[in-house]
Image (cartoon, rainbow, N blue to C red):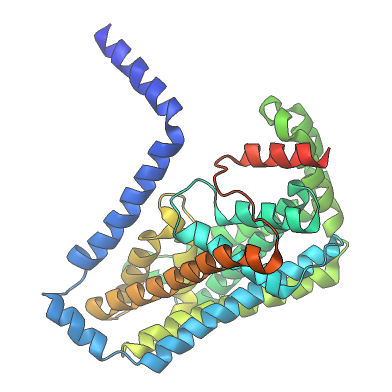
Length: 358
């Protein structure tokens, strides 16, 4: 009886503080994985060893890598703009870049349950005076196009000969990932074939946001008519993924690591796929450890691979800090208030926006 009573109290406490517990665990995991990378996984004997490696860094190459990340922000905004235009939403690349940067701030620096994608959806909905459902559905397609291009690059890496890491074969997982992406893409462009509209109507727990999901369904249903836009989005996605791969390769070269560019065609898509697992803040720690693991497995030195991951981590954090600056100054420039970041529930945000629409 006492044991059941304790379990009941623990369950009640967890349900009441679920979001806080989840956020705390993700912070602990992020910090723990970075600490593990620096103090246990690396081959640093002391701080002098770390400092000695930093002195050898080719700064221009690191700056070139950071520039590619900035170019990636612009290219992501341009891809986003193409998708928005299909729905009659016309916003400048500059505004979309600012929204993307602020989204990076939410994703990588704020331990909250409101992610950067949620912010971006609400930001565009308020700016363009459209529903969150419409804005979110476009963002889903934009995000998915990035995942699909990563899967294509992973398959290209297989043809380049990168099929195993040590004794572990990555051929089957990559092929499965690619097939799943193709299948999801087919579902997104042909939702009627799978009767998703009927599913939305039948599932009871979706009642509160059913009208929003129906709107998402209708946009997916009509989107396949924009073949040129889909082609342009995929071209942007391949260019963006190539820029990310090049940025990682440049940092490795800045540290004298002699891995080929083709190696990073294999490494980066896998790292970013693993980083999407929702177990840390913005993939922090997971991304860095998986990068070091793959680089070392392909022959790079452990200490320099660790510094490579830390430098790329700092570049990503710098983009987040830039996003924080934009978040502070943009309302003064545009004279338009930003969406409230205190909102911690997706359904709450959607419901609030729905009430405004009415």
